[in-house]
Image 1 (cartoon, rainbow, N blue to C red):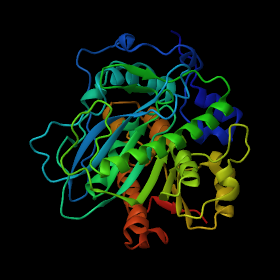
Image 2: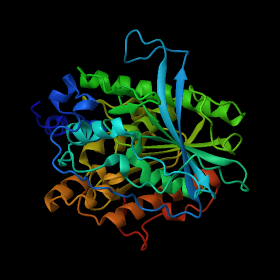
Image 3: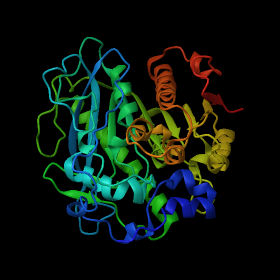
Length: 422
């Protein structure tokens, strides 16, 4: 099919306030007919696609991961008429000390990787990547599948990660794995039929529904993500008591049950996932602290979202790209109305995707410098990754572990790329 200009660019020029909520959404043609996974290899230009690697986590632990299939039988699927239950895929990342004898966790499953390559990367995320030249499924994650959970430190704080619109849950693995290596249990969620592609254990692939009214779509997406987040937290409570929430009964890693401290829950996300962190915190008191990475707090029509109108009583951090004027009205209103702790940071030289795995993976693809600058800015990739990891970890360490929050008090000579706003 003929690819049209990514909707992100049309919306950015027409309605700036929506850009960081729906940033990197979809092409118009992709909205009406998403390519099936079987067509994903069409147009491949190399017999040996490149294999990429994520940075190694920096914490003292190795990292384990398990994917779980969750079924919410209390509600029908909000996106698919006639589907009786809401089904989700989530991944749980955690610290381990016994990764050596376990297989490497896949970055993406095969059908999901094919769809990401042929549709998501360019039609949804607008990254202008050559198709058929990257083996996304083979990306090295430095994560062990099914390894036992490290013991000895008691229950561990839990973090929920929400990806951006048009992003799979794996697109934040660099940051997620780093947090797990520092002792957190991190749960990533694909919000089915709003996520670009979700591959289930039986091999089936669910892809994004067709938005018709952008404003209504965003508002519904946030409401569904809030419900999905609450359901996942409920399932984690069951897991913690020894029950296996996986719908297919697959074995969970040793030591996972009982390891979660659900009195210390944080949430963070990118783009619409950052917006979802704010709206989920607003609705669910179980979430004690949150981070919005370049996600807007205004609706597509320019009106403020409710959470921007009244703020939050619990701590919330805003981390934005350089020159993020599109987030301005919503973030300014949120800060003005928030009685609790809040800060706003800007990553100098960054772009919207600098808070995702794009920062680590795209420099390995041999892209033209102009394409790289458009996708991930001019900041040196290792600096962007190291800086993001430091501030996200310091924030959750302070609010969920009671550690020093000194890094959050003002500019640091160690991380000069992070600017404090006001």
